[in-house]
Image (tube, rainbow over all chains, first blue to last red; front, side, top):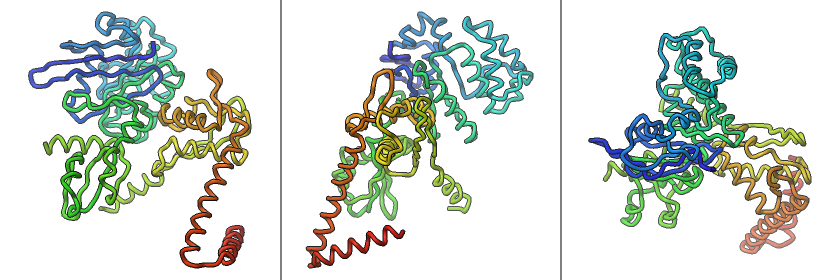
Length: 285
Length: 156
């Protein structure tokens, strides 16, 4: 079994939103970034993986097992970190240990205590007394205390300062370093996380736009900037998210169309650029 | 742009990852520096630096490169990026990947790089000759120029 997470033809129909036929796989030992603008269906997908929503159709397998048929076993192996924490505010961190220890068969109390120690979390503190960054670390500590194979993070970095984000990177790299575990995280910005991601899955408006290696994804695009007077119709047809301003224009192009832009400035992109220009293209119609 | 914004940008600009990688088995002390601003992709930066480490003797024949996952973790970069750097080094004949053991430096690695550099030098010199012919400068003058430049370079 090489793929820790397999999603095939996943569809969820809401009254006002459709997650349409989403497919991707995350191999063992790697980190996948799950990106897309707000409201594109990222959290819906994660809720479907965790069986917090019923899917309309499609398949989800975690460690080769169907996530609904084998829900308990699957969840023993998944650790989750979310934007807001799921623990009761007036619990102390010791209460957290007692509560989760009852839920997970493979819960390891010593591991939990040593994680608290490592993350400098004081066991007698209450959940509500923790800062945002500490709450994230608490959720990570919980996830690591029941020997998970797959870590799912939903917008883990929103509201974190750069130091906490950097610490998260370290923790994630360490988590996958034995090659046996994988990380699936959704996010919409944060440059630093993009550096360590091996794979990218990009959705917009409920549809899959790209899934594959991050390097291929980034390398496939360039930003072009030039003089509006020399802009031809053929060029316009191949520019994604064209923006004109008084002294020139800018837009995103695919590498294959570079030959059309020999006299223009073509720059490498970062992931944010692709998202911004693609969304602008959708708005431009 | 406000002064504060400019400051933020300068801070970003100066961020460069410097990491000394120490492989546990052979205790190689190889330096790899990743620039976030360079146009060269990260895998290429890794490749180039391993090549120069082989050439200048920092890495010797049969020495083990740091493991893929160790290097990725320390540089905080994607495992696939490091994999690509190592795969291309192997394809070009500098290292040998032994499954389950790691990546070894091959004996002909440094020879290959030397050849590559000689080719680069030759093509650069050819460019100089081309320019000289265009401007009707004599061959002796060109030799003189080269000698002067070499002297200046050595002094610097």
